[in-house]
Image 1: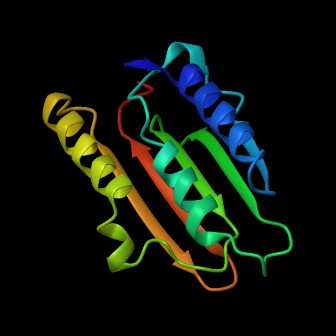
Image 2: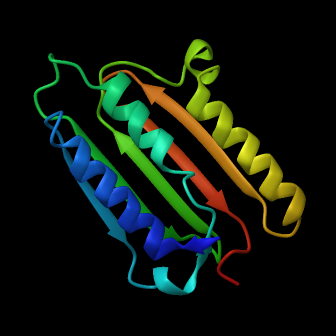
Length: 143
């Protein structure tokens, strides 16, 4: 495990690197009640979601591609929402067979076996005209 702070820095570095290749904007917002340096966090769960947004959701027709990462406390549960405003869905059945999402699901299953009282859930949803939202829920991670 690393800390949430380390993970968010890793994601910021990844997004900055991708900006050398593709034009988009991003933000990482952490609620004031969250102390990222004090929260253990499974590494590399978020990166494949960011990669899917950049590589699959954004296209030349999109005038202002944007990714937002929001981290907050919802009733002592750590919640991370990653949104993109992409025109194309990458959460379809064919995309869910992709390597990155498959690895995330496998890693979550392993963590859920080892940390029975701290389950992790991931839900992804695409809405035409809005983009894709992925919500990670880490129950009992802030207690």
